[in-house]
Amino acid sequence: MSEVPKDLSYTKTHEWIDYDGDGTCTVGITDYAQSSLGDLVFVELPDAGTKVGAGDAVAVVESVKAASDIYAPLDGEIAEINEQLEDSPELVNEDPFGEGWLFKMTVSDPEQVEKLLDADAYEGIVEEEED
Amino acid sequence: MAKRTPLYDAHVADGAKLVDFAGWDMPIDYGSQISEHNAVRESVGMFDVSHMAVVDIRGRESREFLRWLLANDVAKIDEAGRALYTCMLNTRGGVIDDLIVYHLSDDLYRVVVNAATTEKDLAWIGSQARDYDVSIEHRQDLAIIAVQGPRGRDIAAELFDDDLKAAALKLKPFRVVAQDDRSIGRTGYTGEDGFELVLPADEAVNAWKTLRDKGVAPIGLGARDTLRLEAGLNLYGQDMDEDRTPLESGLAWTVAFKPEERDFVGRSALEHMRAQGVDQKLVGLVLEGRGVMRSKTAVRAVDSDVEEEHAEGKITSGSYAPTLSCSVALARVPADWEHSVEVCLRGKWQPARIVRYPFVRNGESRLDD
Image 1 (spheres, rainbow over the protein chains, first blue to last red):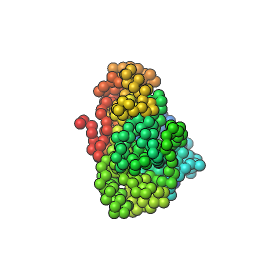
Image 2 (cartoon, chains in turn brown, red; image 1 turned 135 degrees about the vertical axis):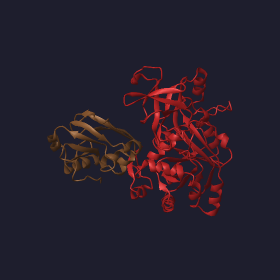
Image 3 (tube, rainbow over the protein chains, first blue to last red; image 1 turned 180 degrees about the horizontal axis):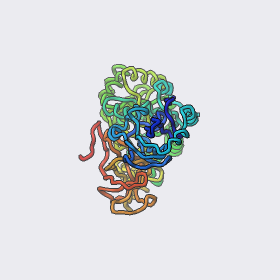
Image 4 (cartoon, each protein chain N blue to C red; image 1 turned 90 degrees about the vertical axis):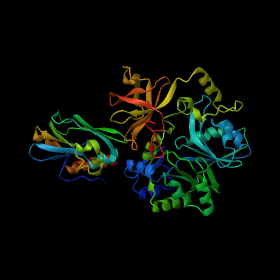
């Protein structure tokens, strides 16, 4: 069973969101997502300053097995990307909720955060997919 | 329900991620495909390939039968203890399967065929054998463990009694030694040295455990695929199939046209194709930038503006190559293409260069040789 930290928010496309309550959030992919993809070999991230809409494909993670789009979970602007992933994509496998974060973004409508999934709801999705 | 090899419980105990492969529950990886790949390149790893079928062909006319059945010529392995890689063709010259045939003793040959093709292979072999005095036995009582990597032979040889161990360690590449139902071949599918062990099922379970205790890493089918691709070894169903001949699949070297008087299934079709000219070939590709080429990716000439769906070339096997830290592929392209091409990755055309393969041999990159 994969790890689903209680204090994060989630999307059904397997991104996690850590909202700081102050207009910015950190985004990554979940433990379940990294485990399903297998060893990552490339991570393609957007440029800082890119304006994004919730649901836009903004990044690509590519594993030995498959490439997968990463979607912006909220409306806003990319503030910072995890540059370590350029040379060390394996950080996403090793520490998906920590060192393997993908990008930080400013959030234009904090009310959207309320609509994200909580840990229990996301766990339900994972259980369904694992069947 | 999916079939299980005798080593199924061992895979589960090792935390394998199991997938359906040709109707078998098989380990795709045990955590990290790249670590498993590297273990084989740098040290040693073992694969359960018991889903492949062992077929013993015995009898007075077994040699003559195999000279008819197979595109390569078993007369090359008349001395018992030799092995040969070959295709088995249909009458159109298409590849029914690729296999290794081991000459174990006078009238006994052992062939190991792919899991996905086992049923059709057995049916074909049976139909072709009608006029020959041979018996054909699918040995479902046997299991296969491949021990591969620079340390593979030394560690695997420890499994056997002194006589067999000494004989195994003396084997040259593509040689085999047999004792009772066991056979040890110095063959593999990784581009590394090693053995493929065919053992009675219960013995295989013990052998796996012993090797595990000696620190040999179990390797899943995921790493098996990246290892064989780096080694430039074709995968049946991707790089060749019943609609493609060996001549279009980089396997012309496995077809024995000489001696002229030996007829074999598919010979006349291949001769016809050779006379007409073969208009497609299999090439190695290395991606210049980032990204991963995958099977079915479109390939076009560099000066072309053809759309993806009309591209003349197609990748048959592609992946990320862990030993090279870039993406490599086998692709079928028009026979006159050379040097450079473009491949369509997620809608964008990216440069790739045509190279000789294998890409990796015995742990070392062969690029830019």
